[in-house]
Length: 342
Image (cartoon, one colour):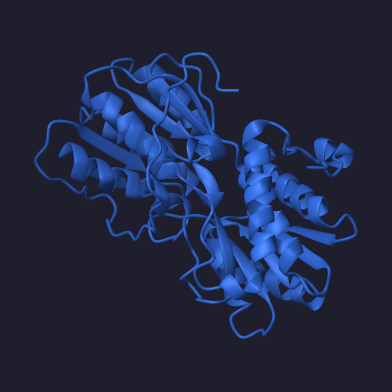
């Protein structure tokens, strides 16, 4: 359910991976009517994941709204509040905070700058000048788990998360449930890196999971995830599943699909509201039916599944949108999930 004061999103076509390129603290500007800025999390631009997805939304606003845009990159969590404060002092019309780890800092800075407008992704901050954007990641993860269960030959699949927190457990629970929907006997291994920006640790965990016979690994770990993806590069018969943006082309033929989380849609929508002079606020929750969550088109891996299996994925997607399947978002909900007869 979309909470009170939520915004209604229009659907847009699926975009590819967002590439980056702004150095801290220089902004990217081009003459326009609305001024937009963004603070990245510690993964920064170039993570080929969450931050790049948000940045793509800013680029779209630059093109569609002729907006002035700027990005400040955070090298550590200690940079969040100073970066937000710098932007608040520069009279931007909307300031985006990328990631749940900035929730406390957004709350603090928004209360100190009541005439500035902020938006945070993946967290809810209850301030009148803050828009909160969250996603039903469990829905797309359910489809990713179903696809993994269809593709596995070992009947062992895995999930790698960045940090073991409720947000990432939505990915974990949805993925395991989707696999169970296809084959209740499948083994789902779960590991957390403890970081979003440690590729070496991600690679080490990926190697461990491969040694435990996992042949499809769903990776939601930011830059740490890039290290895990690297482990499958030269392993025959093994796939990764990407996340947040379309990562399929990172290693063509080895990324089964990507669970795309359209952060760019949220950023662009808030930007359009800001461009009208209105104050975006409240909570948006986006999922499959909004076109903000979903799988990529298996461009490089069409032979991994049969036509009947692709049809089954479509049926599952429709069932989630219709409410016939409710993807679990916690471990407790996963424990009670039973495959649904369709």
